[in-house]
Length: 125
Image 1 (tube, rainbow, N blue to C red):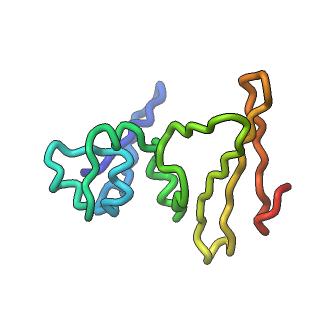
Image 2 (image 1 turned 180 degrees about the vertical axis):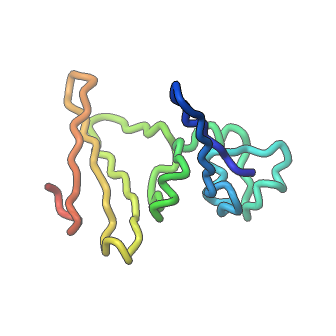
């Protein structure tokens, strides 16, 4: 199963092949595809439809860069009160020897969320 993208202009049409879908890891494909037969998930513990629909919508590019979600696989994070949320993403050691993350801190009495990013040493910037 390959994915082709059509690049069109007024002069020509070009198709690009996305090779990610040729033998992806089942643990990655589960973020974008839900087979009718749970056996075809090829996971040690298959997930049900409710679990699939609550997953973070990770795209192939996330995995192409060698990133791994270390926390919060659910798209909706319920955080009661004024608690901080820390989302952890690991990147390949050959590129950067660290774990990046960000904190989303709610601003009281508003719907605004303040984002604090970490630098390459893992310290808040």
